[in-house]
Each structure stands twice: as structure tokens, then as C-alpha cells.
Amino acid sequence: MDRFNIVKSGTELQILGLRDAVKLLSIENHSQAQRLADLGLHRVDLEFAYGSLEELKKIPIEAIIIRQALWRGAIIHFIKCFGDNKRFQLDIHEIINGEPDGIEVFEYFFKLRNKHIVHDVNAYAQCLTGAALNAGDKEYKIEKIISLTMVGETCEPANYDNLKLLIGRTLLWVNAEFDKICNSISRDLEKETYEVLNSRKTVQYRVPKVDEIGTKRAATSKISSGDSISNSAK
Image (tube, rainbow, N blue to C red; front, side, top):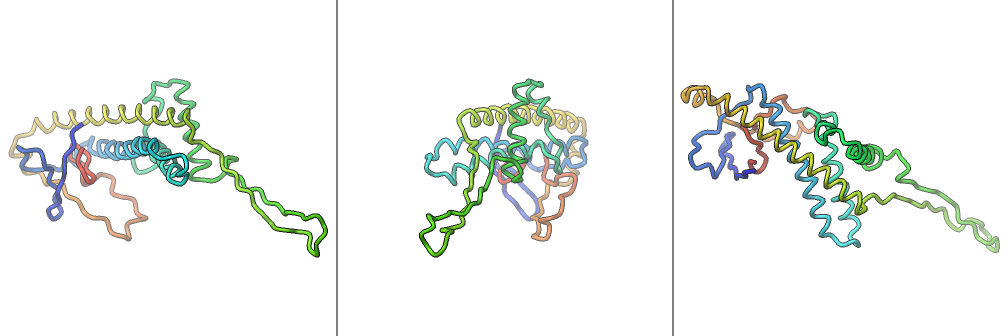
């Protein structure tokens, strides 16, 4: 998978490293452009999740907060690709060919994300409240009101290996699907004359405004171009 640096000139984007490229054409009106853009965003999340697990191996056991942040981040960004959001959902059955063990492992992480990490509803997190009673030889009987917080540990070697395997399998599927669509779009564009291609508008990027934080983005990505673009093109 090739990676290129990009520069922004006004609203236009330019990819560095493609020596013979003179223009970055927008393909937002192509029938497969949205799926390609969705796959690009899925890939970013999957690479983040996989990278989080790689970094987790370097963190000492004593750094509990950092380890949990990386572990939870990996789970959240992985399951995000299978959730109900603006992109099309990935299908775990298609990715792992319906393997029963794989489905069971996926369901574990799906429920872990939904019922414990993001939404606190299951028994993996409990807080027990109590009153410490003294021996009765004081003018008061209650020494202190306390709460005992118990959180189940899920960042274990077996879970780590299973999650990394799932992310890796999903990333392979996404990359293959991404390349397939890129090739299909390239074939379609090659059928057009150079004059028609050169008349297409260029890829443009608009920096989002603060008041858009709660607004869904447009249906078709304005920066899809046959490859995904974030702070680097892939």
C-alpha cells in the first residue's frame, strides 16, 4: 500500500511523490466513490486499533491508565467499523467466512464495547456500598461510609491475541476491497478522453467549522479521489 504526503493549496489538495501527476481529479460523482470513501475511513480506524495494540505491548504493567486507554481505544475503533453510523457497516460474517469461533469472539468484543466500555450496563463494573461499624466502644457507631469499586479485567493475553487477529483479518479484507474498487474506477476513467478527464474539477477540502460538530457530513466525501486522504494519502 503506497503512502504519499499531501499539501493543501487554498482548497485544493496536491499529492507529493507522484512525479507525473499534474492534477488530482474529483470522482465524487462516481457510483462507487462513496463506498471507497467509507472503506478509507474504516481503514483509518482499523489501523488505529491495530497500532494501539502494538503500542500496548511496549507499556509496562504498572502503567494501568495508559494500558487501559490503548486497550479500550482499540476495541472502540474496531467495533466502530461494524456499527450503525454514516458509513456502510462491515459484515463480520463475510470477513471471516462465517467461522463459528470467530463469530463468537467478535460477539464478545461487540458486547464488551456496548455493555461495558462505552455504556456501563453489565456486571463487569460494580460498586458495592457499605458502612464500617466499630466495636461499639465509641460515642458513634459508624466509622465511615465506603464504596468498593470492582472492574473486570479484560486486557488479558488471550483477549489481546483474539482482538489483534480479528483486526488483522478485517484490515486485510478492507484493503482488498479498497484495491478492487480503485481498479474498477480506474478502468471506468480510462474509457474517457484526456480532454474530458482534464475538465473535471479538482479534489477540494474544506476545514470543518466548530458548529458542525453535531452535524452529519455530506453523503459523498469531498476528498475521495481513488485513494483515502487524511493527513497522508494511502
